[in-house]
Structures are given as C-alpha cells and as structure tokens.
Image (tube, rainbow, N blue to C red; front, top):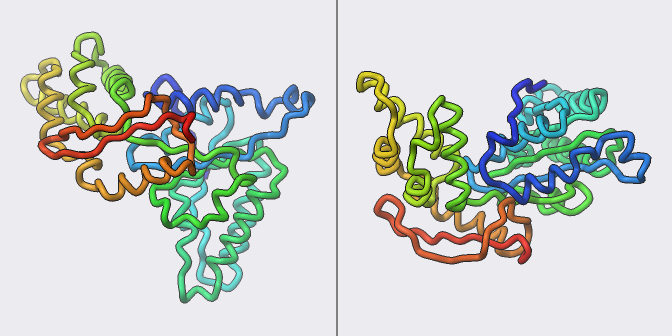
Length: 296
C-alpha cells in the first residue's frame, strides 16, 4: 500500500547515529551518485524494543530522501488458492520496482517467516522469493525492515548483502528522552520552555518514546478536564508515576534484545557513552545499559 504519511526528522527525538547514516546517503538515488560509481543502498533492518521509533524511522526516511513510501503487508500476501501467495508476492515486489526509486517498508518482518506446518510449503516459498529478491534486486528499492522479535528472524535474512546495516533501537537515554518530550509537547501546542525538561527526562528513566508520548497526552487530558487549564510539569510527572513501562513489564524481552547489541550483531542507533547501572522505575529496580556504537 502507498503510505502518504511521512515524518519530518525534526519530529523524531534521538537516534543520532541512525540519522547521520541516513543523511550521508541522502543523495544516494541521484544520477550524480550513479555517475560517481556509487551503488544504490539496499536497505536497513531496525531491531529493538517496541515503541522506540522503528516504524517512525521508515516514515522519516521517506521524508528525508523525498521518496514515495510503500508499506508491504506481509499477511495480505497469503491466499487460499494454490500458487496465489507466490503470485501476490511477485506482483507486490514488481509494483515496488515499477515505482522505484522508493522506500519499501516491511513492518514486523518476523511475521513473514512464521512458517505454518499445514500450508504445503507456501510460507517457505514466499520466504525464499523475498530473500532472493532482496539479494538480487537491481531496481532502487530501499527496504526498511522492522522487527521486535529477534529470535523469530532466520539468520540468513540478516546477513550482509541483503541489508547495508542492522540498527538496534534501545531504550532512549536521558538526553534523547528530553528531545522526545520537546517533540511531543511542541506537537500539541505546548511551549517546551515552560516545562522542566531535565526533570522530566530524569524521571522517565526506562520509558520508550511511545510511552512518553502517551504520558504527555494523558497529562493534557487531565488539565483539559480541569477547566482547560495549561498542562504543567507536575501533571506529566503524576502521569509518569501511574504508568508501568515496557522496561518493567517486559524486562526479560528487553534483556534478550539488548543481548543482540551486546554481542555485536547490530549497530546502536544512538550515540551514548557505555554505562551500566541499576535504576528505579516506578518502584521497580531494573538494569539499564547503554552501548557505544564503536564497540560494535
């Protein structure tokens, strides 16, 4: 499907390493790049904790590179008739090549490789066709594959040649959370300078971007229903205390995903100094780690 909604990079907090990588390739699909001898980039895989901005990044790339954004719905590829799924896959990829240069966003790509035992090998054939196309395609289709469940991804998908880089999107650091608060306050007609952003960033340790956005919205509902008064830092702090972040409710999943980065199997999307600490999050103590991209 053609996705008309894109996202300005200024509205995406943090992810500075990923943004630098993208800006370096901003002119990658121009005639000047071809004439210079540069190949068109193949794509990137975005792996990480839910709510950290993977889907948002796909929309940001389309805006930054001024290219159309296509979203591939993997579930819609599968049909009930013999050969229908394979034909739909060929047709979808052929359409992307016709529109190219473009961004092809494959959201939650792990769902494409959930092989069914009773589908007579259809899933495996669709999987094989996708892998072959990603490896051999000549049309300038930049693939942005997002994944939450690393364990469900086949190793052959993530090898070099299919993606130019694999990025890991971690829990945002303090400065990134400050940027995220600024983005969402500004989007909702609030003046960021009226808030104690440093305090909000400190008190939101362990929160992902989507949770920070929801906290701002909850605080605005609170103030709206009290005679439409202005939302305050205190309102947001109160809402933070009432929310249990993913870093607490899914701490095992977070630890598993971070292990993927610690093993050097991906590059951190954010530039932060390495650190390890135990931090309290809404009454729970969780391990918070950040990684230096240079170590990967």
